[in-house]
Image (cartoon, rainbow, N blue to C red; front, side, top):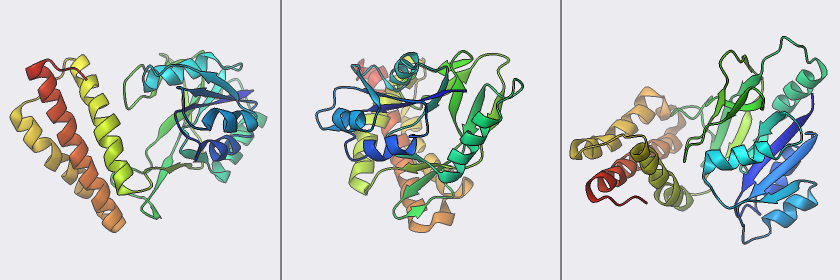
Length: 256
């Protein structure tokens, strides 16, 4: 069982070295970069990664591009701001040593996020299971603009690995706000528009408060104190903004 670790990047010079070191156990590391203007590609190459440049086609498409460039069928997908914990690495090492024909075709891992100086427990941010290790002959990345995920073929078997995937997300509020406004909300709105979903003034008005309540109360964000409140507030802002952008698209024909 040989594994290719794949990482997609754009201006990730502050993250890429640690990301590559986190998957140094892999039989191959493939970094697909969308024309970074910093030292991302040079640093990745110095870490032993095979670096490929590809114009940005969207999250799902870029991750599938990386899968298609891998030498091995087993893929471990890592984001540049993620790290493999020691326990997760041990689980993968054990799987490689004990590989049997009746094992799963893909494996989900729990992702734990570090935010505002603490590991988050609630708000829907943990365990946040992600399917990251899979056989590419039995699955592929869904070609979505945002919230991309691996889709396994009918009949494929999915197991679970012990150990967290560690996610070091937005370093500060300004970065979090910028990512929502410039990336996630516009992409989510476009995705909804393309899928035929529509909203209303009532939908725009209620999306934010509903998302806040869902994150803060229903998903236990209150357990994380002020960090949980911040996460819930940004969740509300994101929901409001994507619905507002969707409303603009459907009423003014302005696709972003």
